[in-house]
Amino acid sequence: MKLSGRTAIVTGASRGIGRGIALAFAREGADVAINYRRDEAAAQATAEEIRALGRRAEVHRADVADPAAMATMFEAAASALGGFDVVVANSGVASRTATVVDTEYDYWKRVVDVDLNGVFLTCKLGVPHLRERGNVIVISSIGADLCAPFGAPYYVAKAGANALVKVLAKELAAAKKRVNCIAPGMIATDMGNKLVAALGQGIVSTIPLGRIGQPEDVAAAAVFLASDDASWITGKILRVDGGVFM
Ligand SMILES: NC(=O)c1ccc[n+]([C@@H]2O[C@H](COP(=O)([O-])OP(=O)(O)OC[C@H]3O[C@@H](n4cnc5c(N)ncnc54)[C@H](OP(=O)(O)O)[C@@H]3O)[C@@H](O)[C@H]2O)c1
Image: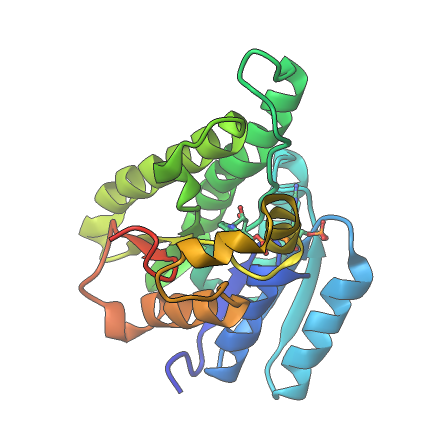
């Protein structure tokens, strides 16, 4: 097992990609703290699956954009698990479809609050609890490169998250702590499925490998980056996208 004896915290692990990462980490031997915002039942279900694998699972409710709730969560989770070998900033929300001109300022701020400020808070509050040679993984999106029309808050926040990864990687390299990012393409989760429904199934033909990704595709990359197999890799944005960007 690649993460035997390790501990991790994963934001947004009640559903989707975060759940997939939390379960994959547990299968590789890690104890995992699960963060969620709304869906307590789903978070508890992820935790039960992890316990069934023989690992410890902690469940913590916190909006990643709420600094006080995040500080409370990180203190509690770090003290329960004895610090973290891996901190995963995964929580995110999609943007509604609108031009920049038609985007309400309050709506812009809310998306950036979750998708960028939430990543900042996860890094700021998680890094002090990293164990020796621990690492951070941020989940951004190929949207950061796509910068398509009608989704500015999401794309801009994800591009900011990519930049934050590079800055933090440089800041932590001397301490032998690594920071990497996975930028997924279209993944079959609640968020991804809504996007496919909006864009139509024809979108699949634009993916060179001919299928939508699964949370497990992202989770496998996260296990690699979290493990010692990636001990000489930091500051990278790894696109897991079926070949959309080559
Ligand atoms: N699916 C895709 O196609 C795709 C593509 C590229 C990038 N991504 C990125 O991958 C990450 C996970 O996406 P997903 O597809 O798994 O989404 P999802 O199925 O909608 O799940 C989102 C997760 O984030 C949590 N969350 C949302 N807002 C939160 C907040 N303010 N505070 C704490 N947790 C919050 C949710 O928890 P609750 O349910 O408890 O609220 C849930 O666990 C996101 O950063 C997303 O931008 C996804």
